Image (cartoon, rainbow, N blue to C red):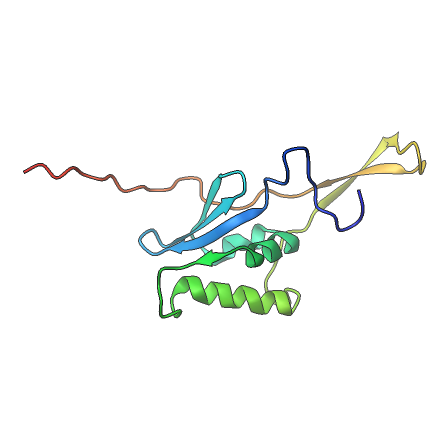
Length: 138
């Protein structure tokens, strides 16, 4: 695998962001992955658990906010994220990897010790309140 190339298997890269939006009734960001999996984030600070590469792919994905005046919380974070990407994340913190060396394992071609890179999990919401829809029975 070359440096900078994304990981793909036979099915394709399913971890990329397909689209994202801001839900005003829940006051949460909803991230939809290519696999169809949805992730929910209530605070902007939870996006600091993402890597720089993931935040750049989030910005490239289509953003949807039903608030048309573009002055709401969703659009404010979208424009802040654009500024941070342009400034190479000068203010916003991002996740850093943990690099661990495996002393007993060597690469057969380069004869160097193999390193394992472990990324911390994202700080997404674990419990999402969903409103029940009532039937209109008079």
